[in-house]
Amino acid sequence: SIRRLFSLFVLCFFICSIPLQHFFGSLKLYRATSPKILMFSPIDAYYLADNLKHWGEDAGINGFMLGYIADWWTPNEQLFQNIGVLTKINTEGADYGIDSNFIKVALGHRELPLWTDDAAWAGVIDNFRNIAELIKQSGTKGIVLDTEPYTISLWNSKKERFAGIDTATLKAKIYQRGQEIMQALTNIFPDIE
Image (cartoon, rainbow, N blue to C red; front, side, top):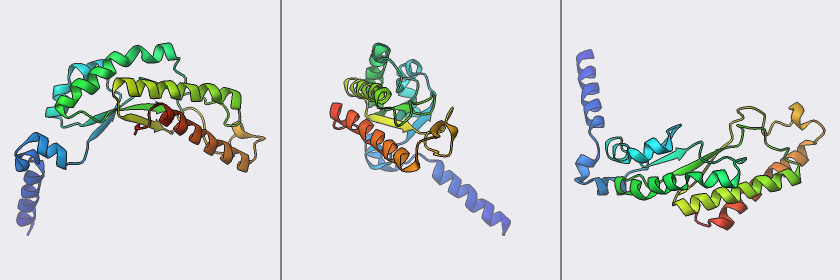
């Protein structure tokens, strides 16, 4: 009957809304046995640093994918302006279970150099090395690469941007750039995630 179905729904909702930590008896045990909850949000790093207890204990967030901290075009001197707040988020946040923070780098927010432009890509790869150093020094867990094409096509060989480059060459260069980015990151910080 509808009444029985509704009662079952209410019971399931009630059971699912009880934080699992109540069944485990401690927040530490709960966190050790639960999947990580990461938040992808344009949250301000300074606001987060001032509200770690709320986000860790009240909201149950275990980490953040922090945007607007570093991008592939960010100059090195500007990149390290955020090291203090990142270090605070990572060191003090761990006390509240916020121990899995990542820096988000959006590849498509600006026009990347053509995949075939070796000279321009040398600078991009150098910037990824700097980002890896920031991640390592600040105690951040790793990097998130956002490949959404916000302003331009990143991979579509039929787009005007890639006119004159055959598909096989384009695929090979894209693969090469991916390898170079990963090597740059892991050469600086072998444990990066």
